[in-house]
Length: 84
Image (tube, rainbow, N blue to C red):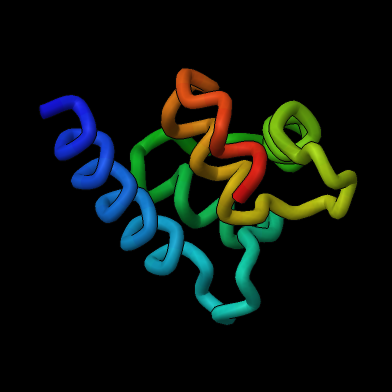
C-alpha cells in the first residue's frame, strides 16, 4: 500500500511540476516559481524566491530540477530519489 501511495504521489508531483514548468525546459526558474507561489496564494518577494531555490537547488543551477522538486514535495523522506 505504501508503494502504491508513493507511486500515486509521484504521478501527482510530476503533473504539478509539468504544470509549473511553463517553458517545458525541465526545470522551474524563479519566474515560474513566483507564478506557482502566487497561484497557491503565497506570493513571495524576489529575495524570498531566491532563498527558496537556494535551499533546494543541489546542483547550483539557479533553478529547480524535477528530483529537487520531488525532494521538496516529499520533505526528503525518500533518500533514493537523489539518484534520479
